[in-house]
Image (tube, rainbow, N blue to C red; front, top):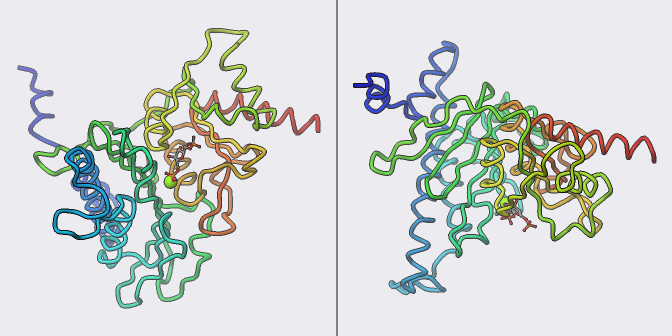
Length: 340
Ligand code: AHM
Ligand code: MG
C-alpha cells in the first residue's frame, strides 16, 4: 500500500487547520485573521450552495419574481452580498466593507469593529449563472491601526498594502484560492465534510504560457500595444501561436491562468478609457494572487498593485499572467511611449 497517499486521504489539511498552523508560527498573532477567514469561508459555502440550487430552481420553474411561499426571490448577486456583509460584520473583526453591490462603503458599528477592511465582489460574473458557467467571489483584505479612527482613505490604498486576497470559484467544484502574503494555496470544498481541503499547495504560475485570454469583440477600439500583442499571439514569428481561451468570468479566467500560465487582458479601449474591471475588488486581489504566485500584473502604465484608487468603484485596464508573457506586453507599451 502507498502509505503516503493513504496518509493524504486520512490526514486532511483543511483550510482551518492550515490557517491555524500558519498562525502558530507567529506567537504574537491574536487569532483575529483566522476568525475573519472563517467568516469569509462561511459566506463562500453559503453562496456555493445557493449557486448550485439556482440551476435547479430555474429548471423546475421556481425562479422568477416569487418563490413557492409567494415571497419575492432575491437575485443571486444581491443575496450573496447580504450573506457576506452579515458574515463579515458578525465576525467582529471588520471596520470597513466595500462591495461591488453597494454604492457606498459600509462603516461597521463601532461596538462591532475589528481591524480589518474587506473589499469584495460577492458574485462576479453573475450574468453567467443561467448557462452554468463558473462564477466566483473575489476579496481583498487591508488592516488598520485603530478601528476607532477610520476613514475611506484606509481602503483607497494601493493593492500592495493588502495583507491578503483570494477568490472562491463556484464551478464543477468549489475552489478557494488564498494568499495571506506568503505564497498562494488552493482549497477545494469537500461537500460531504463541508470543509475546504488543501488540494493545490503553493501554486506557482508557469513563467510562460500558451494561452491568451481577452474579449476580442472589443478589438476595433484597442490601443496599439494591445492590438500588436494580440496579433503576435496569433501570428508569432518565433514559435507556435497561442490558444485563445475566454470565459468572460474573471475568476474562472484567472484560475486557469494561475494554473496553466499565459495572459489575461482587460485593456482600455476608446469607449472605456479605464477598461471595465474595478480596481479595489477585482484588479487588486487578482494582481496580488498573480504576483504572489510569481507572475506580473500591469495596467499599461504601471505595476497594477501600485495604483491608488480615486474612489471605491474606480476601474483600471489590467494585464495579468505569466512573468514572460506580461513582460513582452510591457515592452510594447514602453516602445509606444518612447515613440510618442
Ligand atoms: P461583473 O462584475 O458585472 O460580473 O463584470 C465583471 C466580469 C468579469 O468577470 C469578466 O472578466 C468581465 O466582466 C467580462 O467582461 P466582458 O463581457 O466585457 O468581456
Ligand atoms: Mg465583478
